[in-house]
Image (cartoon, rainbow, N blue to C red; front, top):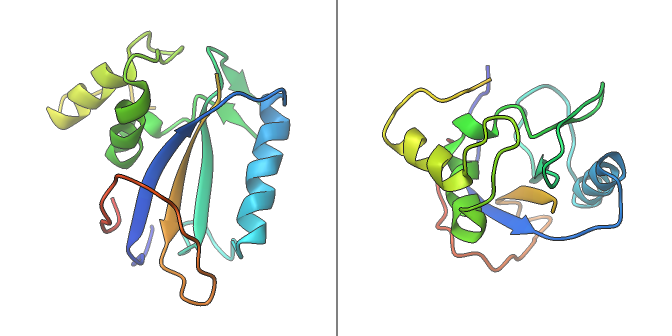
Length: 142
């Protein structure tokens, strides 16, 4: 169970990389570590959280990486910012667009829960400030 979390900002970014998905994930984890991310227990509060959500139309399942991210379809805080920049992108597992997944989530309909996109969650961390331009408003845990 996830305990209390500080306020955070959600954002999504799209980009292209010559890195394979596992190598891109390694870069994201290194960025998290650089900004002080610690993993003392599952669901612990964190200073930054970078996730690889999609990697083109690839479906990847390895011990250290699952793409598409296995829980992105049920997370409004992922779907909303992602739909703002890539509503027409298609989830290679369901065949639905990001916009369709978001609409289904907003309407409360059950979904199939179960070029590289990351979402990032930036937490208040006065000792380790990080500034990100973002159109999303601050909100509590989702």
